[in-house]
Image (cartoon, rainbow, N blue to C red):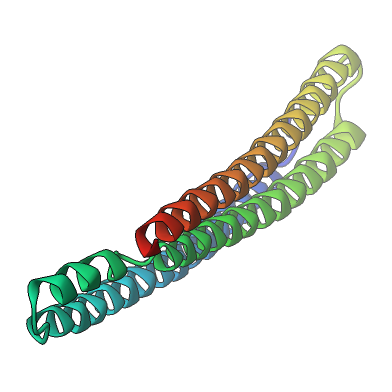
Length: 186
């Protein structure tokens, strides 16, 4: 089907370089997301340690059992800290997902463009009688593109649903924490 071996070789080389660039870009984005996650966890651990230390010092300074038990009920782990951690984690995950989707869409669009250009070029040089094979190839490419578009729509819907559910869970957690904190103060 290819009239020029260099044509195929150049297309394969360009595709390989494009794939390598995409993998490099996605790897860099993954490292950035992991670094953000590590920073979030280190900060959460540091904050938790500082809060625990402060609470322990307050408990040790209690002058009588009544004051001690009052401090115990007041120094519950901060629901706000957990909620903030959850929000930050969701934000990191959402940003990473958006970056991966954007990079994947760009890569697929570029690959589709190159494949279409190659098929068009090959079509111009195709021998007589190969029209059916070319039509079949174009149909296969068209079907693959339609499948990708459907997959992309489904992935976006799933991502949006996940974000909505995380938001709902965070609100429910906040309400429950506020109720618990309100009862503890009474």
